[in-house]
Image (cartoon, rainbow, N blue to C red; front, side, top):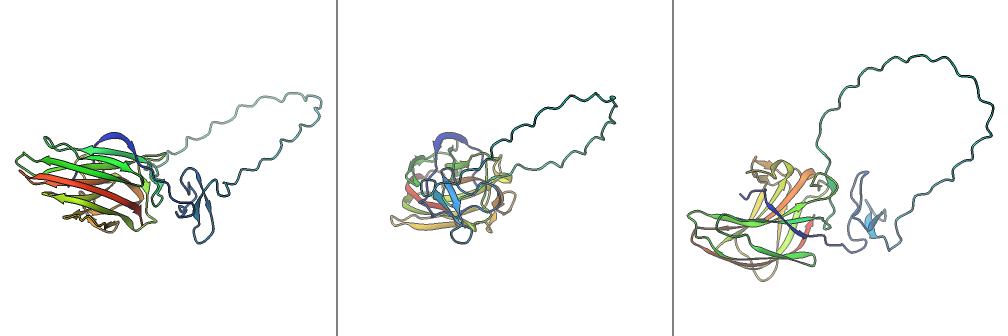
Amino acid sequence: MLLGACTLATCSYSPMPASGQQMCASGTGKQCPDGYHCMADTGAGHCFLDANGGAGGASSGAAGKGGVGGHAGGGGAATAGASGAAGAGGASGQQLCDPAFASTWVGQFSNIDSGGVPAPTYETIGGGFKLVESHTNTGAGTANIGVAFTFSGSGAGCVDASKFTGISFSISGTLSECSLLFQVDDTERSTGGNGGPSVSVNSVATTGQAISLPWSVTGGQPPGATDATRIAILIWGFSIPAGSPCMADIDVTNLTFY
């Protein structure tokens, strides 16, 4: 299991979907990414670029004119008002996460190293990214290294993806002497030694293969299914046995909630 705590890098990931491709988010909050507006064309509606029709502007009425002033009335006798009773404090709660959109995300990549084994390098390319690893684990035990994507935004550093079934992506390239793991951490399991459910990828081919992780999959620490209302971190990690030279050159594309 990989840890959710990482050192943040400065690289961001925010692909832009085609106009009309992405569904509007449900609820009364923000329904589309910045630069898009929701149009109820079919079902829940879709997000269109503001250039294609534009978001509707708010209407405003002109202020009314004041009435003609009359003579000032005499002042009434002052009477002390009774103090009001103290209001009861509201129950504490978690800050709401931003609504999730299928493939338009804002956040940062992070590095995860393991003692003497450096983290893999990564490079964002269009709507995906590349992972490269070429280090030998000289330690006595298995080395777990990787790259994480941490969501950011106006909310609590998480997204509400509960209207989706899970997350998926395509993977292609080469992988030898190590295995690849994909892990999803919710806010409950994104710090310390905790971690969320995961799926292992033992081999990678030059032709793309689809990888998916439904929210219903259980695992992690503490064990259980993913809280889809509070998705915080996505992790792509390499597990390198002692003495093994991990060689990997992997492309990740079509990353989306589904």
